[in-house]
Length: 277
Image (tube, rainbow, N blue to C red; front, side, top):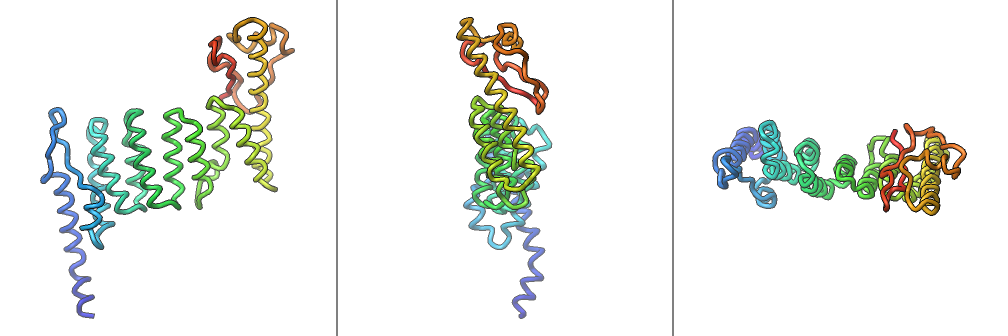
């Protein structure tokens, strides 16, 4: 009992000491490598910190998270690797520290190549806390920024199946796939969601609209290929399908803001039709 009381008395002083040591590591003790005219702060390896952190692991994670948040406010585009290292360490020590994963995986990236590193950080966070829907959602969002629509849809789907996921994730994969090069995959996903909706009236109605929308774009793409077979080129505008008598009129876009050619006249992809909404 006396030992427990002694430990309780020592807890907060020990915590302050540990946080001070770790802040010192990132500020004073380790300005070791030049980066232009700046110094790159040293960040210890996560495995090493995990071994020495003991029962103070979460508090140390918070200290590195706070240091990362502080660094993020100043010239963050010039020190992406440092920020990712700080936030990675924080998440590694405390996988429930969503804020560190968000700042590292969503706020820190400044360029496309940074998104790849951010996805790697978020993948690590997902592996250490597989029940958190936010991590696959953020991974999917980053893939979306890279125009990797199939990967984005894959992770949105994973996120949608985890407890607490936002409702929109359930059907977001269809919209994401419709932005890619394969409308058939988007249509198959919409049909899968409709089949699994059961008696969910709202989902059924939404998927019926999406299916019709996707089928219409596929229909127009087929007509564009017919146009090329007749003229030797893809159309420069959809209205040419009407002018060439392939269609009596263009179908309305009841779901989006109007159908359009993605790459008008392109000899390889000029048939592709999409719709924004």
